[in-house]
View 1 (cartoon, rainbow, N blue to C red):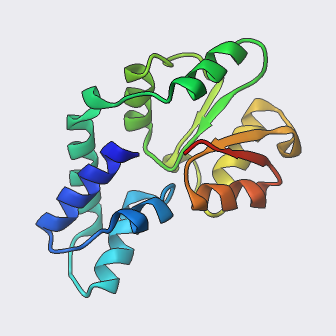
View 2 (tube, one colour; view 1 turned 90 degrees about the vertical axis):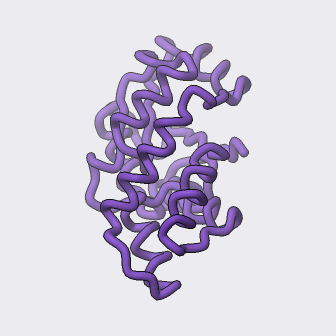
View 3 (cartoon, rainbow, N blue to C red; view 1 turned 60 degrees about the vertical axis):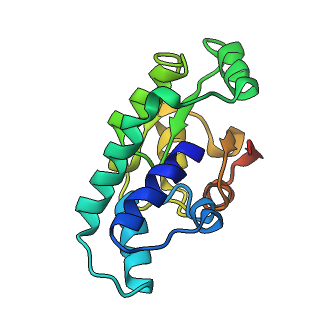
Length: 167
């Protein structure tokens, strides 16, 4: 998330939009186009939300080699690999999620990856988590979500899933 924030802050500043760090963390899990549209409307700045979102993603991808891992969470994922069904359910896009998983050495250990392209509604709606549970063939109430944002916590609650705050 810290690298995402730097990419967001710098990209939005180039378009005359302020994006405070606490607001960034509060919007975690929301699709990029929606973040741009929300902030630009609030600050009365006219931008092409899709273009700005693509620019932000490119800035993040340009820094992906700096991405660090949360060792304790990575250890949990590695420990449970092959022992129970696991997924990634993210508000990010598939190419970026795939690159992040590769960067932190978790490429190929998840049974299912669900991203923003796979659902119409996004966090705080439960759809990304419900889709992951469906694809895993696991009852949502038997799922545990490892999450890093308030919107993700709300989405997990709405899906009937327990969650762990990994921040």
